[in-house]
Image 1: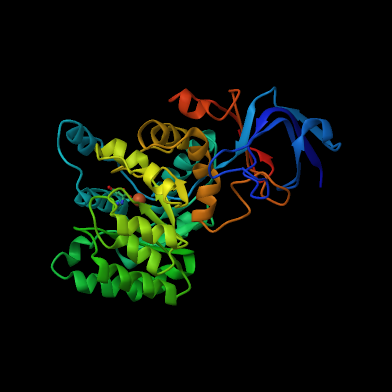
Image 2: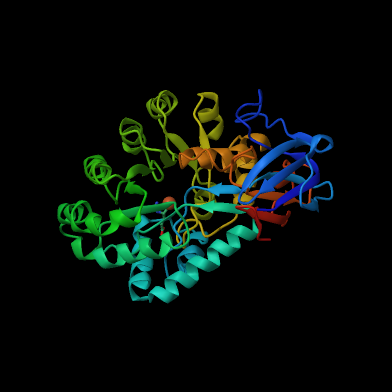
Length: 392
Ligand code: NIG
Ligand code: FE
């Protein structure tokens, strides 16, 4: 296998947990840095003057470098879009979870080829913006067949696949939500579990209540899936505390939190994943990242990319929102979008530039990662390596 030296990096964010002072707060980047890649892994990172020789050399031209973004929450297997709903919302209509039904109808009507083409397009879009790991979900099929095929399609493109049969009660079960929970925890789970790593539920008024969510998550856990929860997005509720109680990897959204929710997150091992694209696109109040950070909660920052509440695949956009409107420092936001996303996926091989980690690296046309928030909307990502391959 041949080695590649990437040198003349202006500043390198490593997220190395072994370096004192290196994230989740200050990032302590290495100035005048280099990395060496062997196959799909980093084998060395440090000051350029100490770098070992390699078979090939890439000159980073003084750019800032950081680990590839880890987008630990998206919904990319769908058809159609919801332009009209967004347009109406920007004219004053509220966001309603019921809009999901529009996408369910379009997704059921789409072929596998159409669904996969959409997924491929959004993944390519994300990669160009520096995302090298994407979690994605079912949840727009809501039949045994349509949920299983969504997961099969997703699993061809990522290892981080989540079963979200419990997104909303399927329209056919509108008068029998208990029957739908039986389906989700029975035959649908049987068909879906082999294709997924995670089980998720939308625990929210208008979707699934605490008891139903518990039933969905525990059934998934009995089949070897690890829980993550759509929690406290539209209002207060039991989602966050349930996630912590069950040892979920992540509680996602966390927009409406009580002190008890924050205490639960701070005392447990569940990462809080913040998704500011959703607040942006639904004109909802921002999650209070500062309050969570000050309480010691580990945060991830992701896109929630979906056609209803957050149709962006851009992690840099989410970083800019988190810094401007959620009280995060630029360093905290960058850490949460890389190492935090990895923590939300219980991964130690991504989100960091350390020997042995997967060689996912992003170069920015900028002197520091602060520019991701300082220059919002500007396409700063110039080069992306994923698993040691130069993709952008
Ligand atoms: O995470 N909250 C539930 N699911 C998505 C929205 C889905 C939709 O509106 O299509 C979310 O925001
Ligand atoms: Fe979501």
